Image (cartoon, rainbow, N blue to C red):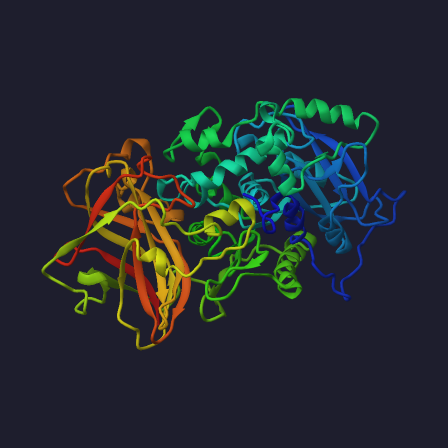
Length: 628
């Protein structure tokens, strides 16, 4: 939802936005074509643009210096949830480097507060609601009608702004000719808020409080109480407000607009009430903001898409692969070793560190080149679709036009007696069968800087050695590998589970790990499932965008309490990953009944037990996509 730098989320939103422009403008970059007719336009103009239903959106328009009518500029459009610019009351300012970088390349840069946020009028009736998405259409029409416009718009943004940039491609607006959503949530239910049907409860509360402060919802301000004062100080929000539009009436209009935000939708209330994916309460639902629910419209629009995500950034990589396999649009997709927003290196085999200026420039250059082709130029989408992906523990980038990648085969690793994990016919293929006891441990989590934290805070992703945590849980480990073993794609775990007391509404979490010869345990990826959501649907009912995921509806009518005392087959999808296991390393699967650092406890009292079966005809098995 947000991108930032460590522990200063809002301040980093400004830095995050800058990543969409050029970190360094090349000396050879062509100067802007500013036209020759009439007086020069101001570099920055802040004004209202009225939507078809009468709601006025606050919009900042940045133009290259010296722009005149007839300039025929391409335009970058960002629709912002977190204020398009912030200023101290009565003081100028609020301009960011992002606009200057784009205008230096000869682009107009337009950023708007979403309806119900910042200085825009209206009430936000739903996060990523239909009206919020629809506004990008009239905004693009308005841009195309300006005397300096070439009639072509590229939508972009990070996180929430990336969500709206991608959703805008479903509008069929012919002025939108390219999209570059960065670190965006393809399906907010599965890829962020309730992966596997389990709520990221500990992570979402602080984020929701920040939204209430930004919106003034229910009268909440930085000075409401000690908690809000501390949060505002931490994110650098104290003393700031959204930038008013130009003119003497700007402050009064800002106050009037913000008065309409006090009844904005409450994210925490929806997150708790929306247990199932088919939840709907008036305009509020999980599906309204899902690109997966708009695939037909996105494909019909044929807008080319460039996107970027991190393997360890919540479920954003899963979303990129759903986009790649579910949409026929021209695509250039990048999945790398990054946190949310790609401000930090996030390779679990290397220490976390900020990206270098050169690394930022490489990422930024791809977006600019893409927009140069489709927004500045009039290139037609050619249908080319490719994924560029990085492999952990190898540091190598590869490009593929197919997913799963060519040479992939599924390798089964059955769980066995004594915590063993092996191939069929190998050490763990025990036909006698047995089971191991798993108790919910409310202390065995993934730490404060895991993949589910970065999407909400923008912090780095850093997992400590998991050997001590694994000792509290159930782990199954292979013998040392004798050759390089590369895993790339979407694995899964099929568990034979017998529920004990407290398991009726429980959950299971699984972790794929690397065990080095010296015993260090490195986190690679994970999966989780609320056991009430275990029902598997007919594969024919699985939409194309879910073809890499177990057919599952997460619908209320398919939910059912987990039976006790009777073995059940439970399939849990792993988040995708690409990793090289080296000779001497061992592959480990760890099973837990809770992750208190990032997920709600199921059940809430933290009391539940399970038996995990191995061997026999129905033994539990880890399935991994090995690439040869």
